[in-house]
Image 1 (spheres, rainbow, N blue to C red):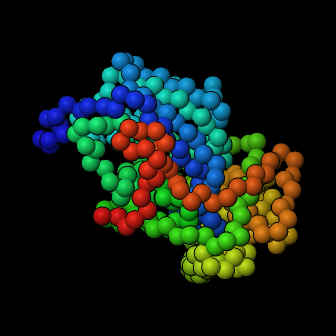
Image 2: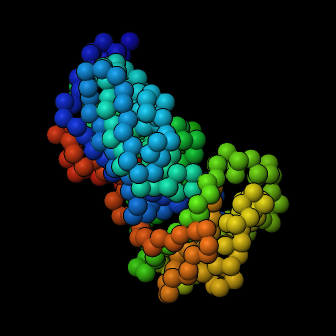
Length: 318
């Protein structure tokens, strides 16, 4: 029996608020490895109550997402309270101001998972929450199933994530000046599970080698030489296989790349992310374009008596 399991948990009595950024994963050739944090954020406030669970949603998902224990943020928080081993609070009130589009390949589920972990950690006063930032990343990747979105959501900037025996790890790099993300978002939604199901179990060795070179080049292009971004964003591992299930996305991607724009499917789609240097391309009918920046901070607690304003540290995992 752990010390946590024998010690009743005490909780913060004041509300805690967290901001979590949208993310784009894969970045063309970096399937399940590369990710970028974007300046489009959800803000979630959590407070311990005397009983019951209630979720208020403003913005994306309003009137659509669950409002009880099956809400992804709440479910994540309850899981983290269980991990910490001291019991659950009597009740929770969440207020979600959502700006990240749902089911569009912009990391809304990863943002929810990261928000849930950080809120639960911030709400525990005693015993001290035994979750350092490396553990937060591992837990978030375990819940999400892969690390490429949760890593930039936590750390900000441009991240390289990978899995090893202990779980997920990631490093953060700074993007070069002049890298300007523009996201093209359709009205239609997509499902990550369907997009993953479209991928073959094996790929030709030549395609794997092609992507290995482009993924390495992508790191250099994003951090040092943006003039190489068009070549660096080429992919043979996932986008073509998914094209039949997202014909509008495939058509927009083809159009942008024929115009010389470094563009790729954002995550599992159906959104498209372009890294523009000059005049911004116009969005076709049924889409809207949004010019963003790379988020330098990643997820951060905005209100907490004992952790006000602290971003998640981007140092090496312990």
